[in-house]
Every structure is written in C-alpha cells, then in structure tokens.
Image (cartoon, rainbow, N blue to C red; front, side, top):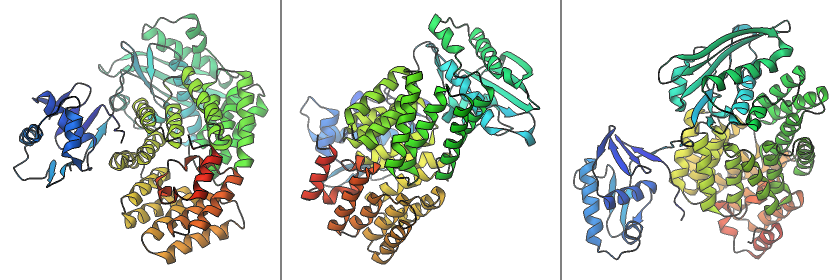
Length: 576
C-alpha cells in the first residue's frame, strides 16, 4: 500500500512535523529518539489502520533485523511522552496477538514551501463600494486577472482564486485573511461600476507588520479597466522590489482582449462555471459564447468554453458524444491562437482521458499544462485523477498532495484528493480530506459523494445513505448520487429501496440522458452481474466518462474476475 506523505499531522495537543522530524506539544519540542520518531510517524500516517508488528518493524528498521523488544520499547516510550497511561488507548492501542493501531483523530496540515526567497501573495476578491450594486463576477474576476498576471513572475508565489474565493464578506479583515492563507502580503481592493465608469481603491499590505506598502484610488471609464489592472500589477511589483526579465514584463501586461464588454462576459462565464451544477455550467457556456461574439479572437473565452463542455458529462448527465467534441474543438481553437495556454491543454487532457481513452495523449497534455504553469493546483489534481484511473496510485498521491499544498482551501482539490486516497486504499486519510472540504462548505455535493464512497467501503451503510441524501439534494438530483444511493441500499440488504433508486433512474432515462454506468452500479450492488455487465457495455458504446475509472474504482472489485468484465477492461485499454 502506498502511504501518502504530509508535512505535518496534528492530534490532541501534539503536532508531528514530518519535514523537521520533530514532535511538538503546545508548540514546544518533545525529545524523541530517531527510531521512536519513525515509529510514531508510521503509526500516525496510517492512523485508524491495524499495523502488524512485523510490518511496523520493517518500516522503522528497513535494513536491519531487530527483536520485537526494540519495537515494544519504542511504543512504551511514545506512550510516556504522549501522556498515555499504561493500558490506556487514547493514542496507541495494542491489539493482542496482532499489532498496534493509532486511534486518535488526526488532522492533516499542509505547509506550502515556496521557492527559497519567493514572496507569497494573496489577491483577495475585490469588495463592493456600494453593496446594492455589487457585481460578484467582476469582484472575483479582478482578483483572478491580477493573480494570473502576478503568477507569471518567478520570484512570486500567488495563492489561486479558489483559495481566496471565500474571502468575500464585506467585513473581511485583510490581515486575518493573510494569516489564514500563510502569505507575506495581501493585495486588497474594492470597486464600483456605474454609468460606464469604474471606481477602484487598492492597497498592498504587509501581513507581518500590518502596514501598507502602497495604496491608491482610481476613477476611470470602464473601458480603461485593463490599464488600471496594468497599474495595480506594476505598483505591486515595484513595492516588492522585484526585478523582471523581458518575458515577465510582457506577461505582467498581457491582455487577451482589448474589448471591455467581452472581458465582463468572460468573467460572468467563470463565475457561473465555478458553481459546478448543470444549470450554472450552461449559464457559463452562454456567457463564454457571448464573449466570443464580442471578440472572436479571445483565446481565454474559447478555453473557458472548452472547460465548461468537458465538465458537463461528469457533473451534469450530458451525453459524452454531445459535449466532448464541442469542448475539444474549443480547446483546439484556443491553442491555435495561443499554443501556450495552460488551461486549454488541461481541458484537452481531460477530453483525451475521459472520451478518447487515449492515455498517452492525455498525459502529454497534462504534463504540457504543468510545464507552462507548474504551480497550478487544479492541473496537478487533474493529472492525479488520470493517474488514479490508470492505477498508478503512488504517483497519483504525490500529484494530489502537491495540489493540496498549492491550494489548501480549494473544495474540488481537497475533495478529489480524498477520492484519490479512497481508490488507493487509504480510507482513513480520505475521510480526513473530505471532512476538511465539508468544514469549508457543508453543502459541497462532490465531497458528500466521495465521503459516501469511503463509508460504503467501511460497511457503514446507514452513514453512507445519509451522506448520499445530502449529495443528491445539493447536486440537484445528479444521477451518480442516486446510483450510489441504490448501491448502498443494496449492500445494506434493503433491496426494496435499491430497486426504487433503479426504477427512478430508468424512468428518468425516458426523458433525459442517464449515464448507463450509473444504472450498472445498482445492478452491481444487487449482485446481478450479467445485467450490470450489459449496462457497462452500453456505457462503452456511449463513451461514458466513468468507464475511465473501472480499473481503480473499488466498487467493481467483486466483478474483476468475470471474463466479460476483463474483456471490457481490455477494450478500454486499461489492461496495462
């Protein structure tokens, strides 16, 4: 089993820093011998799992044959420093005749380590100067544009929009946000658009001192919004005493359109796309198309269109043969205008992965996207998702962890990392990630869906059924949530409710598209393998996106030896 690595683990009043090889209690160092530290680290990394004594000794002493007494002494030493009474089970539980289990709740803490000497900045969403006239798409879009420009500088690490997106309340304190995001500086601002004019106030704040490095107000025609962005980005670079090369200088001032109307429409597209529901994605598509109508040379709008269409089959029950070819055409059009558009390469990677089942081309596109934008968290996670589908779990976990390090507050990044860990067999680790996502947003349906997967694997069917009820509600009746609900009912022995979920999907399929894979899932739970295989083969004909995960998804384990299932794996090309 591949063990995911994290920077730090917190439990009780302790913090285990893997990078510094240090145990802290209330921020004070606790002395440990190197082998005692290794023992604790291995227990904590596999918290909740029973570790056999032999396995634990091999992990701590990989090149040395030692007696069991060495391990027993380490365990006794750890119990003393953790304050665990003899025979207690607050942290380390002894399972007689088997081994040890770390039973305390563990919280993962990812510490982003930027390039040495880099300055770390957060650009917060701009707030409205007049609450009644607020434009959330423009408020977020101004921040995102400045994030993109500043991210092109090699000596700067900029938190992505998904990390700062939650800092939209009017009373949000910039210094508090900066400390929460672990940054050196915060670019904070407010804006108001009225009668064709835009008023902006902006400032750059030093998080440590609380002082402003610069602050300024602007009042211009809205058509000058791009010049205002140039000015804000340049003043930030000057205040930080950054020296730019020619290419960085050009990227800092790069504009993908000179059309202010197209820019506003593009921002509206991304605003709706970020909501991840069928209706909002369709609204995003409408705005991207209007942006392209306003400026047919707007490469970013084509890239946004590609990203919207590649999301539809996985999130919104849209036929793959309807959505993916349109998305591919949009991505190719964007790359014809700008071959170095990382976002378009990422979307193309998904289309090769989910629709073409061309693993090599998909991997090339993800890797090209990362070459162009190495710090883009969602691309690292996208690559992790593909690697998971191929069963390359160790590499997938590394990419997923890097994604979380780069963007520790992104809901989709955290939730998908939980799914990666689930597929790799790390249920306890997966649960921690998914609960983190739900702490940020209790209504995030993707996290509920993935959490239910973990609960099903733990045979906690009643918990899974309750969790899936939330996923179904918050997703707007996404068919995958209904399918997994039927699957959970079936495994729980409630065939009546499982059949009800199956009947619901089949009735829905008479009026709109239902991915065949999702119907197969319920037949699988009912142990009707031939019917499940029949629907999987229909899914193959439809190019159902979820077949890309047949190799990795644990819920198909019961069918892996069936000749028809093995033949399907070969036809998809997953037998590698």
